[in-house]
Amino acid sequence: MRKTPMHIEREEFKKLGYQLVDTIARFMENIDEYPVTKGESPLQVQRALGDSNFPEQGKTAQEILNRSTELLLEHSLFNGHPKFLGYITSSPAPIGILADMLATAVNQNVGAQILSPMATEIEKQTIKWLCQFIGVSSDYGGILVSGGNMANFNAFLVARTAKADMALKEDGLFNSHSKLLTYCSKTTHAWVEKAAILFGHGSKSVRWIPTNPENRMNNEILAQTIEQDINNGFQPFLVVGTAGDVSTGVVDNLQEISAICKKHNLWFHIDGAYGAPAAIIPELKNIFKGIEEADSIALDPHKWLYAPLEAGCTLVKNPKHLTDTYSAHPEYYNFSKDEEGQSLNFYEYGLQNSRGFRALKVWMALQQLGREGYQRMIADDIQLSQYMFDLAKKHPELEAMTQNLSITTFRFVPKDLIPDNPKDKETYLNELNESLVDKLQHGGEVFLSNAIVNGKYGLRGCIVNFRTSKKDIGEIIEIVVREGRKTHQKFMEEIPLKN
Ligand SMILES: *Cc1c(COP(=O)(O)O)cnc(C)c1O
Image 1 (cartoon, rainbow, N blue to C red):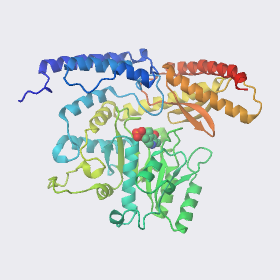
Image 2: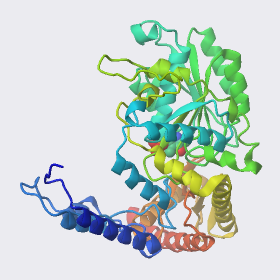
Image 3: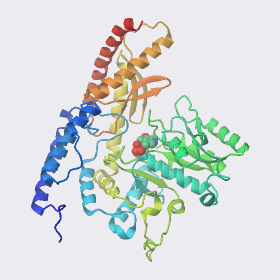
Image 4: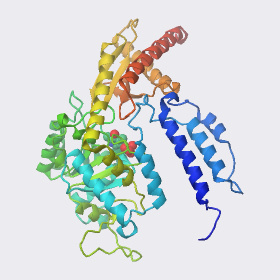
């Protein structure tokens, strides 16, 4: 074989690989001894990286690997740390780390069956297993994408192809299709607005439906709004139900939404990017009732299935709508169908053309844990979140706000707060808790994010972390209270200055 500067001799490759695996194994073993983050400023991180230009000469792989490892282990935020409960980013499954190495070594282009025979079949099987995981028919087709936004975008485009008349493909949105409307609850993730803007519908085409006191979409208002819009000459095409909203983990009443969609012949999409995997818990079957009615579902293996980034997934009840949306047959492709009709070219199921083998890490973790393993781990995460809520409820300086799936929100309320009037008190508490979130996020002991619930700014812990223990939750509560008191103290000292 040709020898090039890219070549690494077999013995050298093994040595580097073993070193790297040793380092990673040690890192995973001791991850709780690292700070969650060093909270460095971008300038500090830039200094550590150094400001050099594109090198003229190459270096040895050993040098590069040593430095890369050091830079990343010394200047990263570790979402695999047991006290990382921010946003919805999980600890990566160790088997997924190995899967990615294998996947990139074989380097399959999972855009076309002929280019990736086994990888295509593994992705198909992964899709089937994900359907069985969340309890919908295995007849759904689907595709792995980079994450929740892309999974939802994909569904949005498929819904439009299915519900707008065929002339849309030729005429675009500018003729008769400018009145296509989307419906979703106010708590829906920001992807909806992005999709409406990027795909040419405009942000005004999204009807944000208010929520009821439990924070679920108010389906009465949904039905009324759709009817009004139809009477006014608009063309509703898509309703988005949320299965685990990003702030507080609430699941909409999916069955009711499905009935409304059927009545008006609308596409029913479920955004389950975070929450859908919880449908695997038998005790939660009721909450997810109606999920099997969805025309499409988005879910994120890189959230509650612990796949390393990136892995999202779109499932579509009738996969024909996927090919209707994406299929194209340029003359330079010779991707003909096989005689048994089993061939699937994933480029016809989504926006990407060349595609990596994301499915492998998901497929391997699904086998390592099986249904039983995932049921236990997801149930444990939920239980830990409930424990966090209980601790907040019992603590005299904390106010527990919400608890759904594995998300708990609460806020710090100092004991000696004497409000002049309720409005000032709420403003003070909001500023105090916002400052507390900032402090915690840079302190490195714990990472929580924030949520605003009924105007109250609170701290938010989302447990999609298989390393977090009960002890961690207890310690997190103590850290929050300790830092909350300090922040309050500082605020009180500053108040005379403000006047
Ligand atoms: C996380 C999330 C998204 C976005 O997913 P990404 O993987 O971050 O792109 C969309 N919807 C919901 C409900 C989410 O929780």
